[in-house]
Length: 269
Image (tube, rainbow, N blue to C red):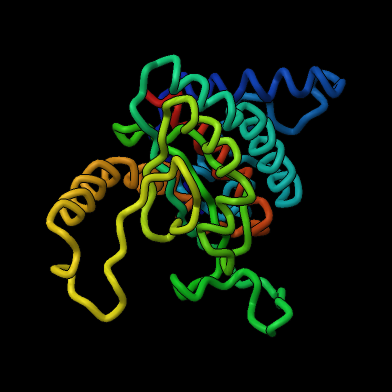
């Protein structure tokens, strides 16, 4: 056996933030002192290593000197306390209005996962996305005009179209925000979303882009340019918290994992 020293490339204040949440959670549920295999700080390190390094839980548990079952239990506990800190959509939209934002950007992404057996009525895999040709969960997210991630939805199976997931989790609140002067920009995957959701104008089927009036083409170009800043929000979360590139836990946990990553991302400096 060869031992070596590794460095977790996460700012220390993030580890301390999570450790405080875990310590408060232990106190809330009445955990006796010194009854855990790991203290709150070392548990926080284990959880953040999983988010940052996309490591296997077995390896993380081995490095921490605990069993694999305990490693999974500590990891899920860390995900839960972080996800509980994620903001509500109505809170996010109210803050955007107070800060004078001109718009927010709605987009969806597939968080890939291991294959999961689950069939729809038509016999297709529930968690398989035909668009991405991969298994995973559909996550909706909002970002600020500068691309800062603001909010993440609950997960829907990968076979769920963006417009359907948005109707379930986001559109009712976005309609009210639009009525109060905060419109939402989105791509063509949200056609039919309704009033207040600004979308590109589709060209007639079978025609070229030139079939659209020049003013309409210019509108589409400007909308695409402004929206592009917000669409990097998912990429930022996936690259910083690499576990979002492929989740090995149950796909039903993808929403909690994404919200936990959003909370961590918000305090990264």
